[in-house]
Image (cartoon, rainbow, N blue to C red; front, side, top):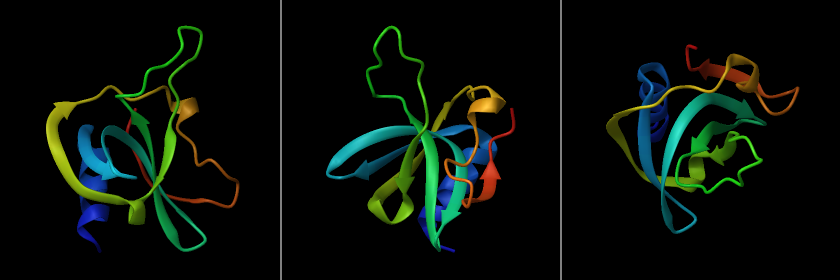
Length: 101
């Protein structure tokens, strides 16, 4: 297992935020779901730094673990989204771990 995978698994199971570098930017994520797609690992996470329009509900983004770097588990906890919004994005995705709601 990679350190990134272990960090995300711990963050999901403990409801902790993760700070990581993604596409050259530092982002803070609330990871809700770890899943596999075509042999690659992804995390479905709420980017807490994203600005949402007032009429738009926050939703999970998909981040390929291979594209994340320098992940740090934070002490800050997060409240998960409702259970019906925490599902694998595609029908053939394989759910590995999900946050307990």
